[in-house]
Length: 205
Image (cartoon, rainbow, N blue to C red):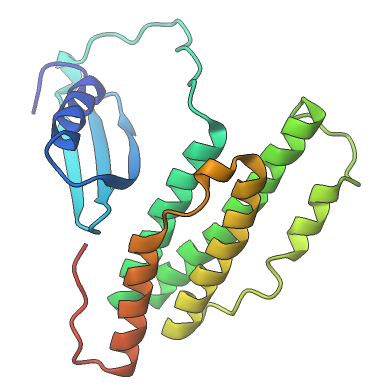
């Protein structure tokens, strides 16, 4: 428990860790004014959760000014979110929690559609659209061949399929952002091996 803003403290901890730990693969953050949770997934697929809390009466009053908008590339942010959800889906699959794994895998299809929306917005110069009819509409159909996510191997196949389609869209945004999914694909191979051989060991990310 701290007496400072938990988000500020959490960011400081993460900044120090990133200088000492393996390269980062994905990150997820969220919380309230008195509790901030940061979940890190490293490229070796180790995972670290950091929770920082403060008492409500220690938390300074929130300022009423609107925070400055993020300068991050929106596609880079989406890639991070995709990777985090994909890794978590693979972990849930490895643990036999097919309910949550299927839910997370379906979320990957939504990330694909968001990527197409970002590209449409960039073409049009706006995120307000009264009508469809652009070339990006066809990407709504690209999810149709994705395997059903009701079995272990179905989920891993769906994650691979989604990742391939997602990368195609990312490449249309910026070719330098394509790829880098090797840790995820390695985990999926291990999950498939374990599905065939239950005695195989699954690394615990």
